[in-house]
Image (cartoon, rainbow, N blue to C red):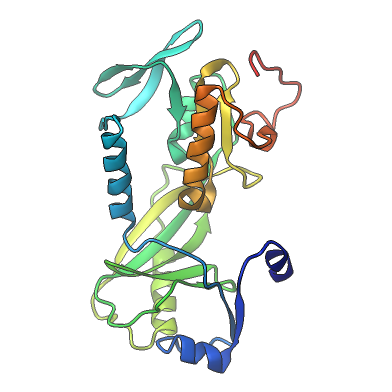
Length: 269
């Protein structure tokens, strides 16, 4: 993998155990080696980032409605309104980007992609006392520790549990124990906050970015798995191109909603 990254121009450095301890002194001396990616970025406050994006959309004329979408008023050429908990919302075009909740909305338009959820957990220490300077990911454990404005967040695990099963908080406890093991100086006296969320995932780990097969005025954008924030901006560019009837500039076949079906024919390109 490192050789592939090198050929693709990704910068990284390899650290031995002693180098790692000098680089990140808050870590316990239990790690033998590490890979440092100097160009990786992350957000200190995901909620603030989302609010900033909403505000930016408002300045461009967008309007935020807080409601639950549950269906469509469909004319022969496609949806003309989204049916919501606050009433129908008229529309010329629809983008379904509802993450793990996209499946029933897409089914209402005649498509049934094999979308499922990879449920993930995190614990967050609001007054950790110690923590890394940069996010740290354990390839052995599949766990990442990230310093945020609100504290130290330790996240990971994959649970195929659907949307309705109750959380299994034993998974969060595993994360808490690993956090204490990684950071000996961690103030673990206070109970950390815990959370469980739904990663929308497809069997081939590729998202769906496509026009709905039956309706040219519907664009689908979901199934990004663990990479929603990373892929969101580029997906938005592609969605805009599809709505405007422009060439998105890439081969869209790998992202078709019906790529797992055979003998499918489209009514529109």
